[in-house]
Length: 251
Image 1 (spheres, rainbow, N blue to C red):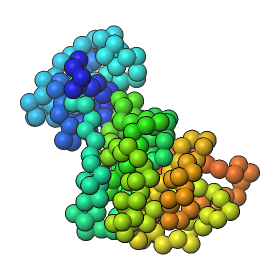
Image 2 (cartoon, one colour):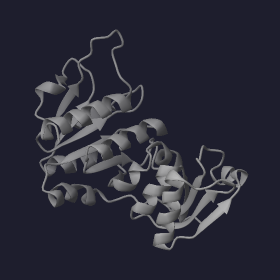
Image 3 (cartoon, rainbow, N blue to C red):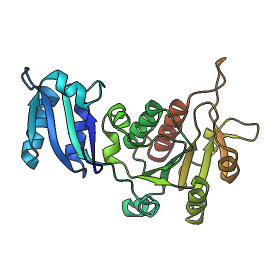
Image 4 (cartoon, helix red, strand yellow):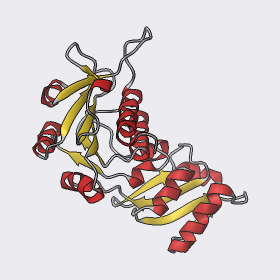
């Protein structure tokens, strides 16, 4: 496999890659069983697009997916192409909507990143911004855990998250840091219909100091139980859904 190619695996990730702008070089499906359901959809979509479909035994797919749970479907694809920050900023205007963005401050767990990306796609987030360093990127594991949602998101990777926040603020986008502090405001007392970007911190550490200081507002989620915090994926997903509901009610 060349440096310009990658492997993704899982039925829905492969199907969504075929339905997206990702270049799919070849699809490999498990041999020895009749292709039904999603596997049949993958085969039909690949053939419609002129993408070669190969049948190999499960052991061969295991090797291609490096032992990961592939569900009988693997694809050779182009390496994920991150968008530019300007692409993210242009998307709200193109849709005629107030900005709705997600920034992730050094989230390192692929499952947490995948959960946040899946929620972001579900609620129509215009773009996601990730830092290049000390954070997980869009890997095969993330694509699999997101059920292919990454294929339908605009995701940018920046060298300096604080500078990206400053650029958003210059574009009149409010930056809301999701963190529980004595200065934080409850989410239900904040105008979530304005152009905004949520910032979710890393697991355990939360928002880094410079990122926290750059936020326009710090926002928290009220809690009743004895555990005084949620993990990054759960808290971020709640904030994203509350923003969607506040803007669109019951769509």
